[in-house]
Length: 150
Image (cartoon, rainbow, N blue to C red; front, top):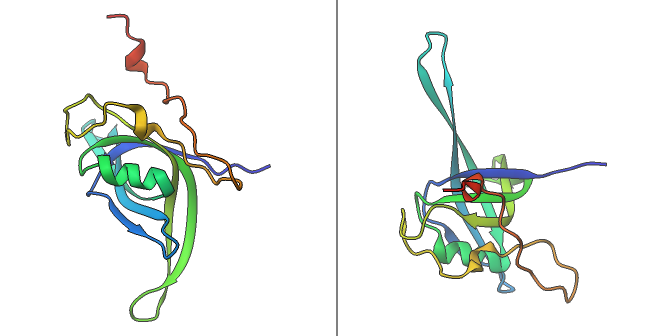
């Protein structure tokens, strides 16, 4: 058995960029920053930020391109993928990216980029589809703030 699953909550480092393949399938790319805080040997609070390259396909890619903006906080679920390519000078390069299968916009309406949809359209789940299978809506991830009684 093997598992390749990534869950991230972070903020977009730049606006998403959408392109279309020759067959018309949307692919959107953006960077996502996740931060952790810790105390160093002197007891001072430090921050470490990790940058992740996110790739989104199909209908979810179009949703991301439409509603996400730099600075927006999102929940991303997907898998790690490493691929090789040749750079402009012909050198072999490797990159590791997260291929997102789920995205949930976080924060309140009107915060950060503001253009949040009124419906849960951004909660679309994109998984590799069998022929004729539709992409479906999923339950949003658990948010402990939703469970606060006041």
